[in-house]
Image (cartoon, rainbow, N blue to C red; front, side, top):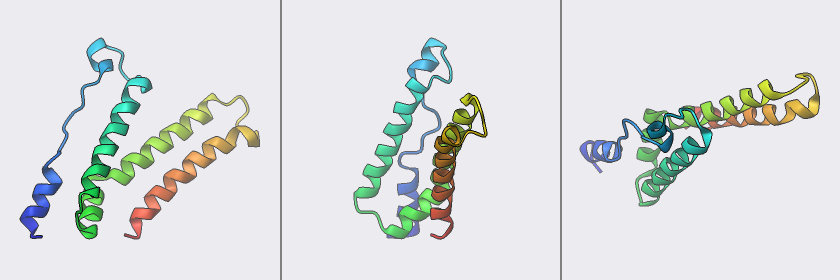
Length: 115
């Protein structure tokens, strides 16, 4: 596979914006609308990868697009949201969920650091 073909694969499904029901109705930031759109985009990406693309091309395309950072940002945002909602930030049980989400974000970033 030459460099031109690789670039074509990387730009085939280039998305500049996603309009959701929330955008059309004026309810911005609604997780119930945005999460399914994000999941659909990830499933499209998984489908494209499963079609037999070379491993190195897949990893480089994911790195170039910052998929790992975007996914880790979602986990970090969820962690911050959980911590903002807790009554006592020093209560171990309440912190555990937030710490797990934050740890998962770090693992996602670390996984791509070594590829």
